[in-house]
Length: 197
Image (cartoon, rainbow, N blue to C red; front, side, top):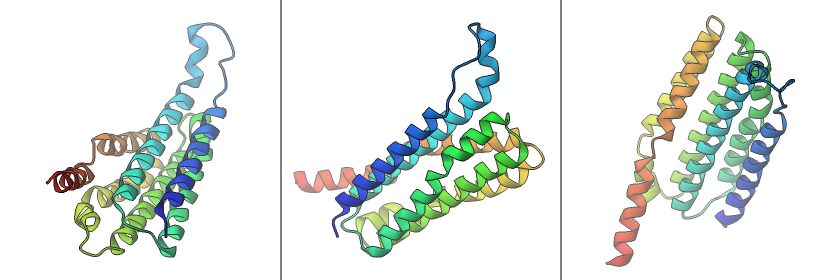
């Protein structure tokens, strides 16, 4: 099956998710700098969510570039990932407008947890399409993906006691993923060397 359609569809959905999030931002009710203060939690949650959607888009793109082909199971796993990501705008707005309250922080973490699990499943299915393939080797044991899900679970539990601390954990996981994923970079470099040689 052609992976191009899967990538184009996913890109469109992720673009819509970002658009919905930005449309939820409302202008300040005033003209002074102090009018921005009530918007800080909303802007912070938007920026964090934008970064997360960007991280998923980036890694999804790299993974599909490395894949040889996709099958029906991969299509459903991809929809599973997009389901959880499509709920991020609601959680983002709720988290921001409540000033980072307990339940919204926990729900936000739950969506990140489920998106992390869905991405892990998708990556494993794509890699399984070519056991021993370059992609399977590049993914390896996916330590960073597993660690992220563990951090999300911890942050969800902490959210009921200290929602701001749970949000700090969400930020730390995002920072961990902002560091470029060298697994795919090494794969592309090896491909480039092989085609040049």
